[in-house]
Image 1 (tube, rainbow, N blue to C red):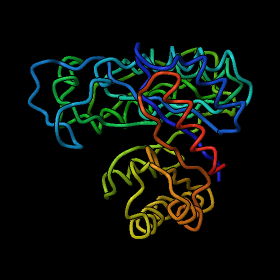
Image 2: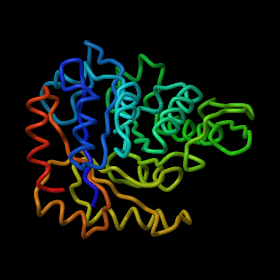
Image 3: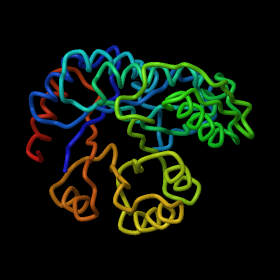
Image 4: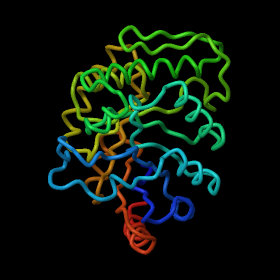
Length: 278
């Protein structure tokens, strides 16, 4: 099982270059970065984990810029978003950004897709909260049209998102879309997104997978997807030998461990501890 990591990189933490080099040298499989463009001070949305919102949420680096730096100083390290708030982006510009990073990194990019939890942040982007999931679905199909081998138009049935048949290069290295994982809580709505346009699911924390993975496999099969192709990647996990063994028994081929949003000394110390699981 591949062991990857995620971290809230900020202007106060270890740098992307230093972390990426250390991860590759130590044998970790990948680096996933979260996204928040801004955190409005006047918030009505509670922090999902409870309590005050941690400082790092309002200080996150742009994941694509940071991953570009990481790509430039590594050769094998996987690079991903965990997650991209797709509905908050212009999908035409986002498709270009994703394809460029995947191209320049030699096909090492994984697109983590998410729907968000902060209503105020989404509202500043003009996102209708109730419609954000369908906007994300249609944005994904629009981007896949731009990544297609031949110029392909797309018109979303509900969101108003559309693109004419266009020349749009570079393309993702593997052809079609880059590896895509959808993050979020288990349920029929989430699983419909996974089966529609993704390669798998990123369950945060990885709890309850014994019950939820079979349910996802049923949705996946009904959509006509290859049963062997489904990927489940537990995300933001604090590791223990028993937990990692359980994921492996469930067929998970990758797990993403949570690093603290600390300085170089703190982060490298945790990597020393995580290294025992490699």
